[in-house]
Image (tube, rainbow, N blue to C red; front, side, top):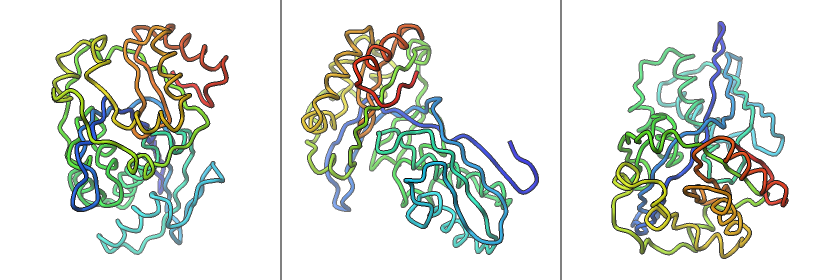
Length: 282
């Protein structure tokens, strides 16, 4: 939706379907392999013409200066294309922070696309992905906005056609009031020592009921050791009918895949009754 001088769009969250940490690279990043899909939970970004570059946010705990990724991509875009125009960015925040859902990267990607439209820039998504990848490894995924397998440091994307047996499932997710530092999660992680079947093959050829032993998130060992309640939540999702359950990214959100929406609602509600989640998402 937009009126003259403004643009608005949703910035969706994501979940990881499997996440393998293969090795630490010479440049300090980690070599990864992960499936990524966007979900309905989303922030809302609005950009509008203004005299200077500024930002506001519904969440007062978030920075609205150059420490915010939305401001960083705006500054980068103005520099790359020699733009002097001001703009105001407003972020309506719904995606939990430090939850493994990619909220900050999604906000940045959406801001980038909205500003490219607002300023009538002749750019492709491939170019936006290229110039923004230095600011966040997940940003290119949110620009592409399709199911992918991400490799390299997470910026090399291969489109993924999920079968109906997967795309028809319902997601039940909980975000406990635990904030996991991505840097801390990486510092304690072990490199992958599980199934060698490519994640793309697992997601397209293996039934979700058989993913448990072959589709793992390598962050879980370290993060669950630090926060055992997250392992309890994952087990509870399974005991309440999840075909598959996992932590997303480096945590702390835990999700389950269910055949029906009512079964997903019941499973998440059971966790809420036990005070295990700060936010329920179905």
